Image (cartoon, rainbow, N blue to C red; front, side):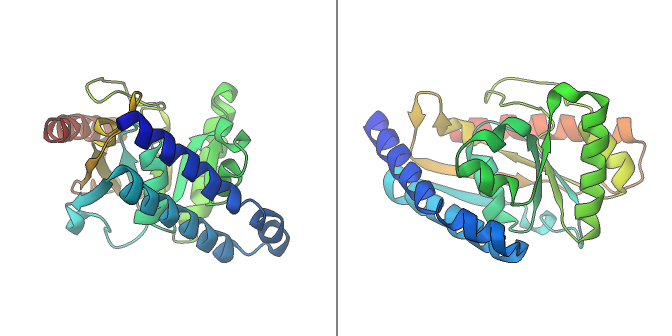
Length: 237
């Protein structure tokens, strides 16, 4: 049943994504970011409806008092699956996500993600990529948008560890924004062998204020996320 539900969901999600493909030329021509983000919310809400109806997969949020620290912030989230890249378009609709450049190549899906808006990082460009990321993040933060980064840089298994990439420290130093750590256990359900029924838990931890020594503050964020990720993994097992 797990594989059957997974195949059914994947097929329906692909069809739903392709249904929004004809909107791309119109949205690209109109150049109205608010309208594009509205289309992205419709797409994301449809995806979550399919998760609920086909997979029996839901989510809940903990620590909601920490979710919005009173202005733009940097959300720092562990990365286990595609689920969280979809989820944040729903959870924080006007967020700007930092992601790898390769995602833009995916038909339809890539266009919508790139115009969410998203900061696409060419990981092979080294220091130039880091500088471009900072410039774009500053521009989006000036518009009142929060920034989302997956500091592990790649998907990491539920019980695995991966050192944070330098992009997070650079953002913290240059943007002068608080950091909200977010842990989740989506990998317990959105797995390599299929997508299981259950409830993904997201936990928003207390914000780390701007202006602290960057290396020390981000090491603390990494330790907090690892501990919370372990707790949620046990609850989702």
